[in-house]
Length: 491
Image (cartoon, helix red, strand yellow):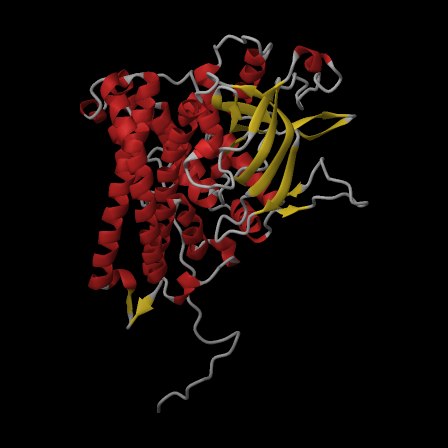
């Protein structure tokens, strides 16, 4: 006798099994079971290509650990909160005065994700001088590849922090000239930018875009005025940053139309001087009374964006912000390329990290989703599609990490590839520098666009679920969020 159909309800009937997203990397030495393997095999290939045998276990252990930090419930909770509780602005005090103290309100999740990244060494690994046996940049970006997709754009200020650290390091030995104590101040800023201790680590912004927009900064309307010795000896001129160090001798006025990393501790920016466009380092806060306040910076409004919801992006008015000249006056664009070149690589690396997460979700979903009685991975047409998408991802990742390896060689010397298969790819220092200069814009342009297309296809794999903002279950299936966030990398 045929069974009588039973109507489904909100609590009965079919429920799709939630897929299990595997750790992205598993160290063979730390695997808990014989069947625990690396989910993203491109990481194993990159490790063997660019790192000597003596370093692979150390780097593998670090990747193993961060791959298991990512799916922890606490980490996922922070990521969901950073996405669903975006930054807000409280520009005025109770009685209508300008709020110079704490106008930007950020959720705990955003702050916690920054701490996780700092502790993992997302910036500091690239500057750890105690590491000389292998390519520090490859080590750093392998770690970041496992973290970026879950960081909810906290990697945006980290990329600018890295670029600022590189920029300052290029000029940290410059003479003070007429800006007394500059070297000491910049040395302390640099130390904090590359720290892995969250209690003292700083992040940096990068403010160049003005109301005229675009990458052509020649129309910059921000002005930096050199204070006279008399002004500097006055009460205001003797001001101190939040660390108790002297403020710079330049007073900066202007308007920045698009400033990411608004919650950072300092920023690099461009401003006009009598000799032309120049680069400056400005602390975000200065001492005021018994506390501190923003350093002549007013947050006009926060941007309402398609994605990157947790990232505080703002319009800023500068009135008397105090800063230090970095590099040669009038040569700001050339000098600040050190920041831009680093952030270009981060753009490519972030894009392939998002793509990696999208494919990981697809692989997991094919093992629990059935169509016509068979799992998706058993469907030859679907497997063929997955294979094609995976090849494109691996090609983009290989290109990106070639650029990363070139960056490391340009900093440490090509000898760092000795005893690795990559020695044939990067034979000398001059080759590394020339290829890096050629490929950085290519990597940024090609991988960012390819990743957006790839993530849109990953959403297809989940059907209607892929289009939904899935904040449940730690947001592990929220490909819509990752897709939205990835689009900014193309701009």
